[in-house]
Image 1: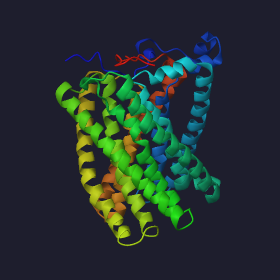
Image 2: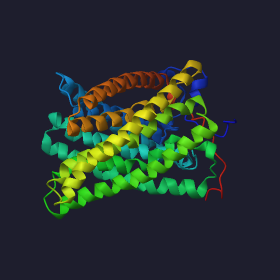
Image 3: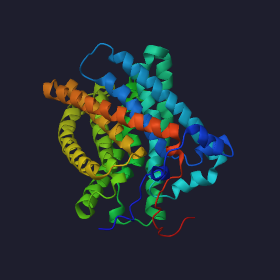
Image 4: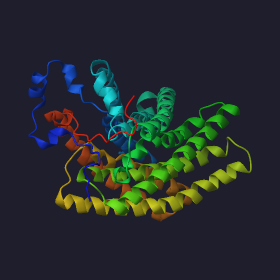
Amino acid sequence: MSTGALPTMVAAGDARPPRPARRLLRELEHPSELFANLGPNWFACVMGTGIVANATALLPVSVPGLDTAALIVWVLAATMLIALLGATAIHWLRHPEAARAHARNLAMVPFYGAPPMALLTVGAGALLVGYQLTGMHAAVSIAAVLWTAGTVTGLASSIAIPYLMFTRHRIEQQMTLATWLMPIVPPMVAAATGAALVAHLPGGQDRLTLLLGCYAMFGLSLVASLIIITLVWARLAYHGPGPAETVPTLWIVLGPLGQSITAANLLADQASHTIGAPYASALSALGVLYGVPVWGFAALWLCVAAAITLRTARERLPFTLSWWSFTFPVGALVTGTSELAVHTHLHAFTVASVALYALLLAAWVTVALNTARGTLTGRLFGPHALTPPPTRRGLR
């Protein structure tokens, strides 16, 4: 099997010795050159950090100090979001050609779904834990602004990125990656995070519009995700896991699965005082009737992805930003499992949520430390060694 056609997310700096950040800065003609190769995949750091705070807040168990820890992590995620938004603005202003080149690269373009999800994750955290610092009124305002921005850009990514892939790239089956889920998952995240805002709207049409709008985004993302997950399964069956650098992205599949379980149950909580009978009862039941079977498939995928990852790690699993795929998707499964524990009162789900939460913490600490090291040495700021696939009709 030839894997040369598969795009990767590796920073070119992985192949050469790291350089201290100060030396790197001295070698640059202008400080903005540091952001010359900044891609939207960097926002996965915010997603992976923010979900730790949100998962902590939604755990079905109470542990002293967890609330404070969640607040600290949320502040860190919010700070990272602000810094990355500023860096991205510099990137577009100083390096517009490099920024536009990302849209022409099949390996990078799916990650335009990451910025919307970063906005949505931090916005949700404002209501879950951030209110301890800002007060509830300010938290609602922050959540509303970030949810609106994340939803609008997320819907745009779910339309624009598939359009680009369908019309401007020539794609073959062995090039299928779970990263294709990135641009179509934001509406699912918007559905899950929008549930908390329903109660803060006036009753009547406003609440009903938001509730049903979230369910519509739930369906939009769910159907598209199932199609892509099927393609990923087929690619694994016919062509194997592919290059080591792409193996962590298999964990992305857990993202839409976990978020859909979370959304179905959080929206069910709002249905009882938003929509009348018999729909309120039906939507409440849907959270469990949908969530439990999907959780079963998520558990299967978790085991398969973990087995492939361990098999690859025994040979070689170099660190790249793709390692953040170990965080947000697992965090989404933690929140989904926690919601099932709350709605079913099944102790097994409580135990599972705590076990998955421990896995999330271990993954986040590992990936965060490696990212910090790569950032301080400047290794992660190098040009990305991406393999652009051939185009179908050329790029207009």
